[in-house]
Length: 494
Image (cartoon, rainbow, N blue to C red):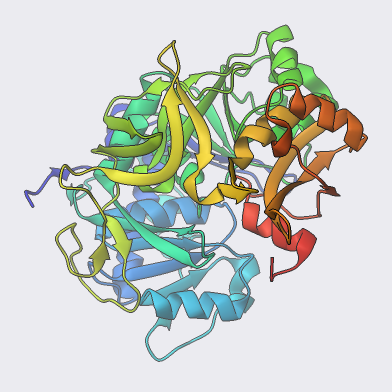
């Protein structure tokens, strides 16, 4: 593979917009604000610490933390050093973290202060500690921004593996998706072609960095010279939007409902609201229209670096048009993608390599002869040229000989003003094989009322025969974990 040596987006922006704010971490305690020049310096020093801790190019670093300045710094330091950055959810129990570290041969492990109890030393990996206070570097900690020496970053190969993002398949066992820096750059540039982002703008990091949506925000902001603002957990989201002058925001329906109930006017200064997690209830879109909020919807996936299509949010539930740097084709309603943002592949369990590319034997990447990747989603293009998602191929089930696509019924149910979210799934039945049932978030109307709603837009056999209340499960990404919600209602054997 031909090398593509570049200076990382962080250091490049430190040269062009040195005093622009890169990261803000507001807090009632100690707030942190770093310019791009300051962040660039600290990242290079952190890279020296990683090298001193024994990490070499090609090593894999597991990073266990909630969203933090330290986690963002580690991401960029790993880019500089050629170390594979692998953020893990701090919600994972210690035993699961150890299992993942061993499964994907993560050679070193770091954890944030409040998550150090999750660290375990193993024969095949080493735990490390890092000094983010930089007390050993007084020329940085005591200098004013104007006194900091100009950064002299190394060039990195943007086509080699840079980070690992875990993504759960239908089996529930996380897959390790590998991306190179170029994947992220192409995805971010494509996003900005439709959702403008520029220096002085600020994107609230409401999504965790261990999900592709959170990592995508960091890359977008660095390329554009915009600010990443960490969420203040001690303050209502609506209050933070106004206080910190947030211009860009990624939300799921549940978060949007919370903000609208707290203070709808807090959204008025937001330039772009990116909505995810499936079809958006029509009553929420009406409220956003009344506030004149520019809202967008998209179709994306971990394997393509985040966004694939994006469009103006509307009631037909479409996901917009194809962004630059991506290709998409539909055959028999099945969606295939390819392009420069396509990941390098899935890391095989217990594999070791210092220099991973698509040609390495340590990776799995199933492509057809023309290089197309099957997304396992079903969809079609509507008359306006926007992508419409029918649902996941593996969600479809047969009831009494008839195909049922759960997402079709979920979209109808979410038209009801009292329903925030809905999951339709099959329940075993002796006569029909399976019957559709549903889990509802929000007020649960009478079944007769919901039957009337569903049957007005779909065949009668598709109506859910039973409804469950939504369980208490925390959602941390744009996509609802169907498996997690169903298991919380029926138990792990569901």
